[in-house]
Amino acid sequence: IEHDVTPALTRFEKYLDKIGLKENTIRLYIRLANMYLLETKKDIPSPEDAEKFYDSLNEKNLSRSAINNFAAAIIKYHQMINKPVVPIIMPNHPVGLNRSSGFK
Image 1 (spheres, helix red, strand yellow):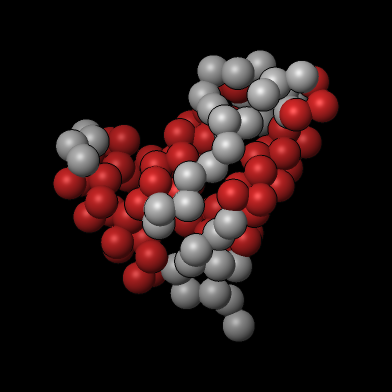
Image 2 (spheres, rainbow, N blue to C red):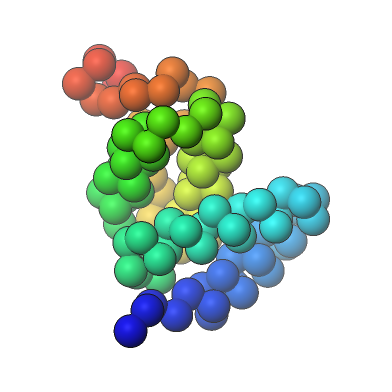
């Protein structure tokens, strides 16, 4: 049985609208958050889940832009659920950046 992320995504859409994001950005973040939640199989992923997902993106040879979009969506989702992610998942950092590369 596939995890039903619809209620979580509905909450996320309302949250993004409330904080004033543009419609195109909201649609993008919803699509990316959908993939994230289906991968983690949780409505309330942990910061560790976010880090694992982010690391998996680097292994998929996605463009930096795509990874940055995922990171931005994940950061916003974690802000909504009040489980902030560590700075490791930040847009505009070089692909593959992780704690072992010295980023604090």
